Length: 469
Ligand SMILES: *Cc1c(COP(=O)(O)O)cnc(C)c1O
Image (cartoon, rainbow, N blue to C red; front, side):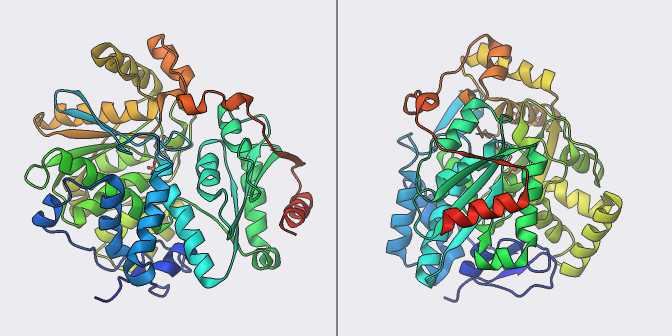
């Protein structure tokens, strides 16, 4: 069998194999990589997944994407290592909420949010491929709190990687700060910048724009458009669906959505043969996607802060992967739509394209008041504390069943964060303050390490070079 190739959504960058797609991230033409064809699983293949452990299933689903790049024994060790960092025996437990509603808990990893599911694999894949090639990279990123810790946990103690993570000093929550700064591994470098999150992001952009510095230290990023993250997320759609009767029964998924990476992985599972009745997109007040699925118009507005900050986005970067399919996998057409979007802040798909999108996706939006109401309702109904992101998912699932009168389809809500990650919102809604899991109970008392720097590019470059030498 020949290895799968990956093509760019904008049609101009060269097709690449898995290793290069992993290390490249964004395509050279500004597009995102997608598989040239989707690997297929038959109904019998899917039935055969029912009794697998999560790491076994992960290897089964990821192997056709990786091909000969990683021998099976190495891939097994890599995946086993990634999911040994999760503290639930099933890795991703599926819990019945009531009626036909289920919660798929994606938050038992090191940083208590769903990004760990993919990032724990991504860090190991980077390290594996870099070692094989005898090279190293320096990952640089800026965080307002959430993604930084997932990246740090993914890269810690990896021989071929150094990671520098910038956060705005005093402007991330104490728990988020501790999740980053208490990782004392030699290759992890936390930097608090005296400035805002935008300052941090601007300094990171400056570093990437400094071609000499970028080449000298092999700068890289672990952003949400990396194909390998989508690949790792496809697995749990199969995992949950087979537990509820797939392929002989259809299920629906409700996904609290920001950059569209998580729910696009569900779309991938559908393309690979998993029977999915609907992918339900949950949005907060930053509802660009909900408006798109209602009208076919993608239209930028300002971002407002909400109780579900990981979904406070203006433009969903991974949506480009769906758009590519909607325009018939025509890279030039996709690029043209996105150039127009960049220039005008708006694009409109055709009636037919919208109809095809709505065949697969539904969407709903919930503001903070509604989100708190859902957290309270779920607690009153079943005694379960859920975080604000998950609450948006529950709301969207219920809205879909009300609209479409299909209450008997099992619906799996992706629980993307542990309630203890957002204790204030949960307490305000329910009067109960969720506790951190036992293994993190002493987090705020642990020794930490972090360097504070002025918002100044030269000082930042010097600090990085000193650490790397
Ligand atoms: C990142 C994140 C999301 C949004 O996921 P996307 O892949 O960006 O759509 C939702 N919930 C939580 C808790 C997150 O951290």
